[in-house]
Image 1 (tube, one colour):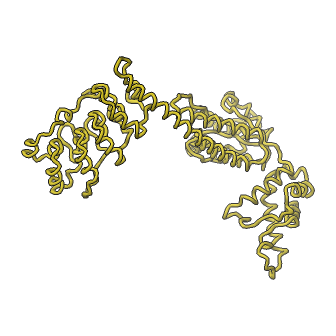
Image 2 (cartoon, rainbow, N blue to C red):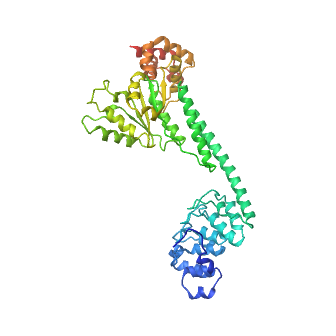
Image 3 (cartoon, rainbow, N blue to C red):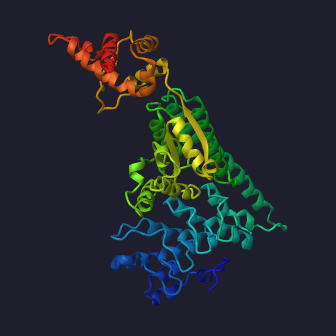
Length: 490
């Protein structure tokens, strides 16, 4: 049976009350069709389960019949029914139409408003994809009555929603004479709706950018990466706004990356932050970051590496696969045919065009050149390469302050604070004085946690059990930080 276009419902041909039919029939649908509220009430008191019963052929509930007949009294009674079974406002007939569809296609303005006031789904779709607004427009075109269309627009029906043929409600209007009022009504509502969506999208975009900026504020250095993050985020959020306004824009490609730098420069930390940001702006469906090294990917025997690598890739789907020390996948000598690292790399490269996972390769600058030159498709797929420079004493001091100001509850230093004399310049001078350039290059941010943990231990050592000053018990001084660095050097 063709359901591609609206058709007169059998209900339309039975809208005129027929008292004799109601009295001679025991069908609850007949009572509703006849407008016999008293008989309906009695019927439901005797058999409450009939509230959502279906009639033959059309599979319509009593609420479908009442809505189509514009019988407000019966619709109100059914909606307010307090029986053991709740009224199903979203029940669908053989055409996939809800009671609200029936009210719309028959121009039943009063019952449509009652259903909407009780929470009926305004954008429900029938089998042909039409919403109640689509059907209200068809009724208006047949009968010249725009009251029901007005009702749906007052409840903010979506004028951009499409049916199975890709037609919006406005598309169904012909350009001939007699439709000017209806067309003007829909066009005005559509413009207002787009303005409202634009304002909502703008507000959401600003809130997300503010959240992004607060995350970036906790990243020390890495100015090039921060700029790229802002570009990605702003572009994705503007795409959200474009789509909210009904514009069609191409999806963005997954940005595979390489992070090059010494240990402690923040590569892993940035990958975790990146996962949250890319999820927030819609590039990734999740914010998970799966961290792997060579041992997680490479097997010991022939045939083990492929399945092992694919398992990790599957685990990372929807998020980021962070391959740390990626250069260990490439043998030092090309003639080393017993090394299975290249097989693991090829498995990873094979999924990089799928869009299911973002890959970040990380490692020392010089050894990573072997990875970049090992595969012809690497540079085509890995479109962003970021260099993580060694951290200066001032940047290390910034990390110290950030860590102390953003302690997590189960962290070792939760509840502790720095003395006012521990300002950024003083801490930077201390780090430069008490650590060597070689030490800073080898550890970078790895200096900070041991330094603070040692400082807390020094605080404990110098405090007296008779100390009654609560603030002194949790305040780390420059003396403690200096002792913490000296212990680290030893």
